Image 1: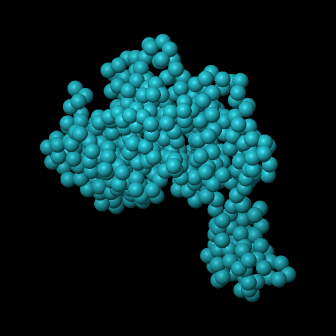
Image 2: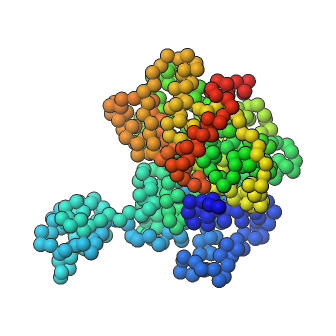
Image 3: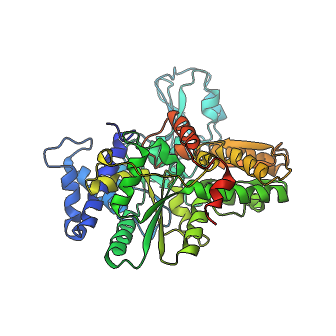
Length: 473
């Protein structure tokens, strides 16, 4: 059965699984150095130069599984020792160079970075090149190409550069912690720090002294994950892990839809605040538009706040597809409500660390939210929910939305708004293509995910947002 899209995800999962297994058994401190040897035994073939380097890299992966570099506030971090297999990035001359007489590339280069050998073949002096790309534009043979690494191509906010050691470097002032680079790096050299130890500690302490209960909120995109089992079995598995109860974060989405629709009608223009990577993008790239970002908490934070307001002994863990949620949980406006965040990848590791085969479990019920709360998981769902909430509250306001599917579309919409040429009064901003179902922490990605989410939405017992929220009273 296929649990992951790539072997990189599988390797990351194996490290998380072993770290979690030792954490449950209170053997992590004494066995932590043995984990790389467990995953890569002495005679195992490796894609690295030798088994020893592979283990050295695995040791760094273990550190990330245990929380990563605490001095680095970014949840997305580079494992430098693993980032040495990609070719040098930047403009380079290929074999297509014909050694022509025109030398347009030399003429257009203002830095004098182009020279020629005895065969008139062009060469680029990297110490002088500023990566302007003019030489590539004028070459009649398209012989000069801009070679970018997968992480750079994945990062649409240009937060990744290549340092002097030829390793990827993340500019924290630009990074929105969406995790696109994490999913696209073919060597797993960029990864997200894990809080799996924090969650295990919460569960163990709650079971030991029973002074508090650990609630788990699951993102609606869970309906597109764990395809090898039934959703009800996943819910049972969560309780087997020791969580007190399982609640749909989609209920928080219902709460947000009601409040955000009112705010939109009152202000006349609004952008969504549900995607933390999108909100971070606005803060960094379009600070003058911050006033238009909805003042509501995200569904995760709003529902977590509700739980803690009604249960002083509650601890709240969120599980979803999003690496940026890990950063959101550290914000001053959220950290009192959400105690830890895990991805679906990490949840799979937790199941297997306790040898829980969810396919053998009975089915529990997860039915806290409406259809509209559940479809927040995919692009366009938030907009549909806001329209529905306006209708249910009898608010006469005509929503003219622009649904931004991915951070590049978000940038276009925000740029138009900053120039006062946007023909819309509501921006639904989703950093990941497809919405949350395209998050870096998903087990699998694909077009079928949207179908799964819509099907899951139609299965909701509560058919209106108001009916779902009424259960909170």
